[in-house]
Length: 324
Ligand code: UDP
Ligand code: MG
Image (tube, rainbow, N blue to C red; front, side):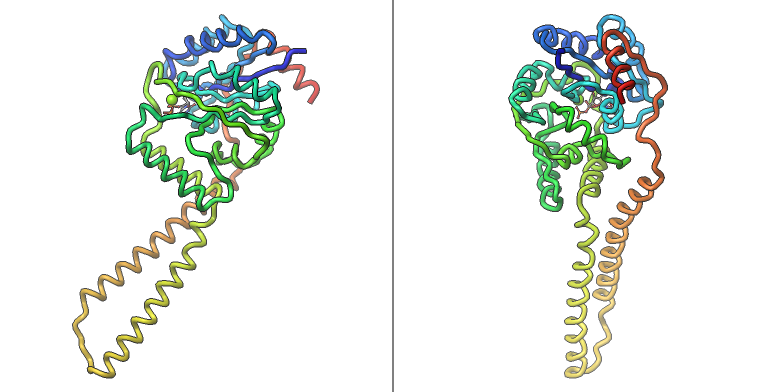
């Protein structure tokens, strides 16, 4: 029996990249006949021709499993949908805009065959990223890793090969809010890192703007650390101590020099400062409470409109379901 390799590709408004993506994957798959390749393509509520192009691609290639989500759920949810359907002994999440070169697959598979359970692909440089993006990425990972038990490696994205065991472990994680990079790191397993040069996007534009990235960063930090919550006890302690010291100074000054009424400016400044600090504390609390709120509703991570399996992949997929 051939070993089975599943590529999980999320598609969001990738019209123009679809056919090329499948061609490139096919080309590289053909050089490795010892494996059976399957592509699970998840359409994440695209508003362009992506879905019809995916149907076209499925007619052209074998082993393509298509999933159409009912709306845009975000990349993390789309990946989850893909991982839920992947039947491979090894599974590789890969961007559909071809920024993740499929040509890295032979290398990844070689490491997997040698016993690695996770093969991470690390970007050697973030060409195409502006200085601001680079700096914010570096500082985010630095900050995240300082305050979290789970360390997320720098310049490593979702592009990686995972053994079946790792995928099964990931699928057991019950959370709705899925910060994939963190979850990947959390499950652990024997890991090897290989470098790669990311490509330019083939067509279209990146759907991650600064605001989305900021929210992703918040997601990452709140998912894996409670330090921002706990820090407020210490901030409060320091501020109270300072206030106590200052109060004693005022009392002594008044006793020695008599009453001195002016002080409106300093009074306002300190009231507003403390007010601001309290609001930040409440805001941080809100971030966590909001996440608890979303989490306890236990809504599904994604909803599927339709799903198509074809070719050899279908047979094996059904076989797996029957065995399960
Ligand atoms: N993507 C998705 N849902 C979204 C946004 C993006 O499935 O809401 C997919 C997109 O089709 C691509 C991958 O996630 O395959 C990476 O997205 P993008 O290229 O926009 O991000 P970047 O490469 O700039 O990080
Ligand atoms: Mg991209």
